[in-house]
Length: 239
Image (tube, rainbow, N blue to C red; front, side):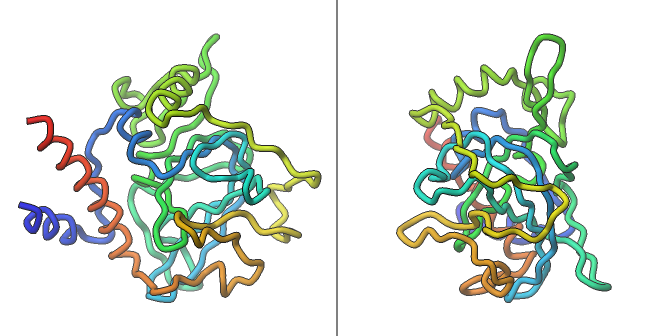
């Protein structure tokens, strides 16, 4: 059964993205980290193993699982497959779009010393004010009340119940971040889990490289497989 599931997930074309409807609670449980903040800017990079990725840079306001206090950073680089470099354009359906200054909640997966947006746009929520309520609204299914909407206070409670701790406030650095200024005196966190968690280098060569290299196709497939296997095992245990 595992082999059949593996073959199905790795047969997904790079441009096709298939989402299985997941409640916010399930995504909170699967994510390696969660970031609440606002979008600053983006840039496109070439991966050593082939393919193109988009680096989205966010200013963190709250987080869990990212160890911002350990590294003394308040910005983070989150990667998404696809992008545009020169004449090469790689379009991956489901990758979210952001406006500078936009408030968001990002579910994050760590893979080979990189932070990647989990479930692409399905793991991304906009933070909006709706009447007297503050809400998180999914970028792909904003009108679906089952998976696409939640009060922010309920989201915070969900994180605390599932992750065993509250979202912690990220201390801002003394210098401001400008959404339209690509030149920074300090690079954001762009790192991994484990003992070798690292801070992004100012060198594009370090920022753009992967230790073993991975193509866009393999990356999308691997991220899909990770979520699929997790859900399969939980369903099997529930029987």
